[in-house]
Image 1 (tube, rainbow, N blue to C red):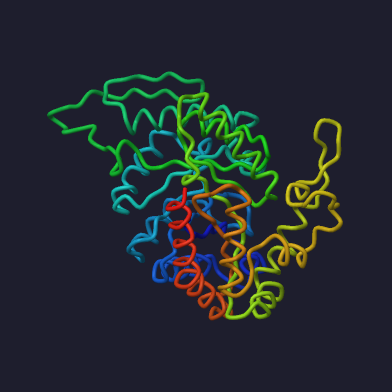
Image 2: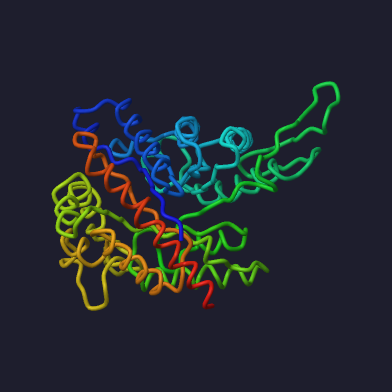
Length: 374
C-alpha cells in the first residue's frame, strides 16, 4: 500500500488576508519537499478557479514546480477540470509535463463541481458531456498517429499528418501508451467510477464510510469486467485523513486543536451537514461518513478523530491502516489532505517524517506478508 497526500489547498489564512497567495504556494512546495524526503509515494493537487479557501487554478503548474523540488515522489492532478480547457492544448501540456517529471506525472480528469467555476467559464449544464468529449480527444492526441479529424459537439480537432519539413507533430507521452489516469467518486454507485472502469482508468474515493467505499469498488469492478478490463485493487486510491505524532494523546490534541481540526470544523464539516434534496428526500452529504444507526447530528470533529480518521502514534496508525485495508478487502493507496501548519510547521514536519519513515515501511511489510500468504 502506498501513502500519499492531496492538497486542495486549504487556505483560510489567505481568505482572511493574513497570508499571500505566494505563501500558500510556498507551503505546498515545502510539503512536497518533506514528502519526498521522508519517502511518501504520491502528492496530488486540485484545480479550482473561484474558491478562495482552495486557491489552485493550475495543478499542472504546481506539479511542474514540485517536480523541480523533488526527486522520486509521483505528482498528480485531482483533477484537471476538462470543460475549462481546450482538450488539445491540455493534452499537449500534459505530455510535456510527463516528460518534465520523468514519468512521475499522474493525470486526473473531472467535470468540475463548483457552480461558480461553471458560471465563470459559461459551460452551463454541459460539464459532464464536455468532460467525456474532452477525454476522447486527449486520448486520441496521446495515442493516435495523424492524420485524423474529430468533430465533436464542443470541439473540433484536425490532427495533421507528420511533416518532414516541420518534423511534427511530434509530442507523445513519456509513459507509454499514456500516463495513469484517475477519476474521483463520492456516491456509493458513482457514475464517474463506472466511466473510469470502462475507460481503464483508476478510481480515487473521497472520504466516505467503509460501507460506501465497498459499494464504490463493486460499482467500479462490475463496470470494468463488463468492459473487458481486469479491476486491480492496487490501483484503488482512498482518501482518509492521517495524522501521526509520537503518542496517541499528542496526535489527537494536535489534530483537534491545530489547523487540521479548524479546517474540518469551520470549513469541511459545515458543507457535509448542509441538507439537500435528492429525489424528493432530504439528505446531507455527511450521511456518507456515518456508521449504521448514526444521525447527522452525531457527525462531530471529535467523533471523526476517534472513529473515522487514522490518528495516533505510529503503532496506532499502523494498526488502524491495517484494519482499514482489511475492512475494504485491499486498496492500493491512502491519500490524506494537507493542512496549513505554516505558522508552526514542526508538528506537521514531524507527522510527515513519522508517516514516511515509520508507518510506511511497516505497512509495506504487511502488504508483502499478505501477498506471500495469498
